[in-house]
Image 1: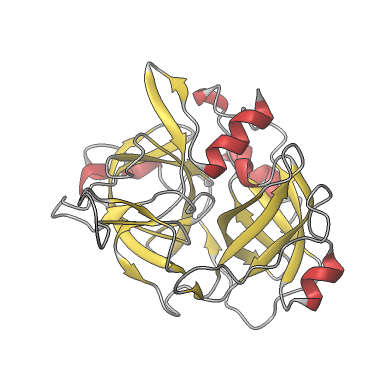
Image 2 (image 1 turned 30 degrees about the vertical axis):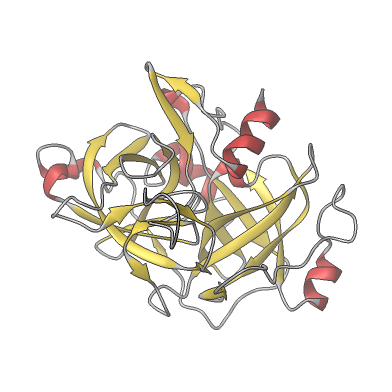
Length: 284
């Protein structure tokens, strides 16, 4: 079950059942705008899946010179090394400039990524990641341990323990969070049916804001509707693992969405909780 769910979730967004509601691993910003150099510590990561040999991408955030935090479904089952780049714009239009592994079945090697001008790292998944099966033990968090330290980018600050607890309802519904990622932008196509849909290009870092909707011991849920006048939108395909910021703190990472057009609720793995922070202390 783990590998098929992960592959589909990263490629097009797989559907699983949780509390009788369908949720889907997330991917890109809905609404918002290009980030430019607003969040230089947010990276695009790309990797091959050991089960199908296909290449996927997610987002991640630098929290120490050698560690990025991301989602567990962006680290579990990776073949070889993970590509890391902090470039704000990857490509304005197809094709993608990201390198193709010499042997997709074994994934990237550090040597070929270095030769192509990219950083490389080793993916590590939280040992209690439940693969979208247990909301009480979600733990959709992973890290990329870099082969070479990054010393010229300001680090993101992980929120203190239980930082989000005071923001439960009714405060949550008045709290504006900032989300960042390299996911697909949802917009109307140039031609054909004018229904908003995820667009793969431009491939760039984007940023928007979302309003809090629900807080559990594991998950922060937010309203991703770009028509909500209180905020700018939400996350979509490719934003998985990207950061959620509040008051300058990194409080969560993008985990899942409820709809394929990314214009409804989004779920975010809290990283201010003991089960995550105790594990992170092993790496930072």
